[in-house]
Image 1 (cartoon, one colour):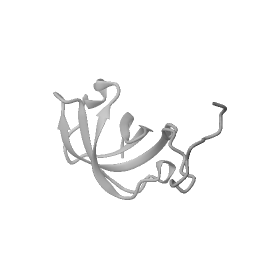
Image 2: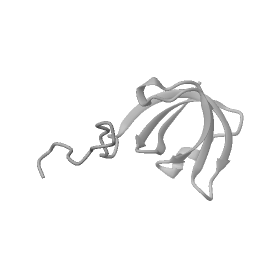
Image 3: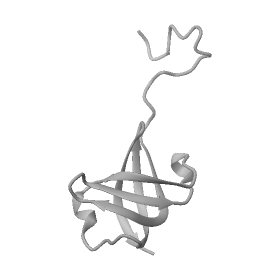
Image 4: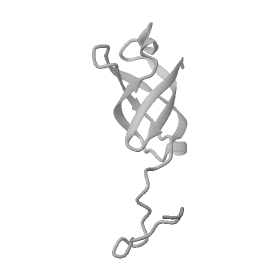
Length: 95
């Protein structure tokens, strides 16, 4: 099969390939830190680069050392990388 998408009748031409990785930057407030699950929950504003509206969500921290020195209620700037529906915070900056 060549690089084009075939067999899409009834799907309105929707491309079934996995979405490409996206990166963006956001600003938000830490609402929870779960070091056992390696998750950081952030209530953040819109992140246009990845197509997200304002929301609260849990992110995997990559690397896990991002937790050091962070506290619930702290306002941060952060970098996010998405792959499909999965998302990771890759950098954190105090705001």
